[in-house]
Length: 171
Image (cartoon, rainbow, N blue to C red; front, side, top):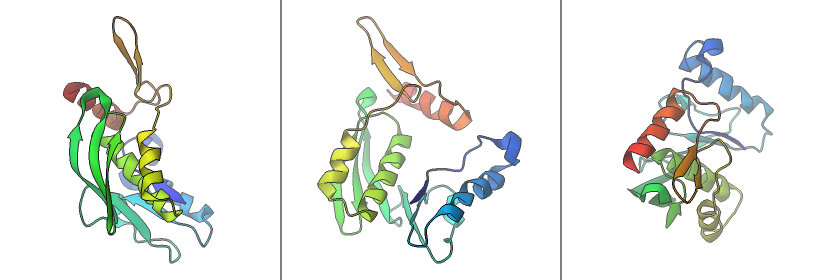
């Protein structure tokens, strides 16, 4: 299963522009088995143009109700995370993504889409999302007696910095 969450501006020094990033990221499809799956962020203007690869049609996720997997009723819970309702076909469920930021809702949607592809139940998908723990360098929050440290230094790029600043502003 190939999952691509966005086509950002990282690696432009080698790839020229976002079209170059799209071309490079979609090269992963060549390694996919014929029975494979493609899961893409349909809200990303570049990924939304991908029609498939060798007959494999993408599963699109996003915040638009036209997507195969989408979220609505999104509410920031500050540093506790983001709550939302995830829709997958006829099924829908409420979930708390335990890391702040709208970008984490997109990650949860990608995970839900993959879970559905592999036959997980709604409860299993929800439990997996709600048990998310960030890794060092990826908006890892470290609480001390006197202050909160936010470690978000892994491979910073303009998109990731904007997401972090948005979280800190809203949090």
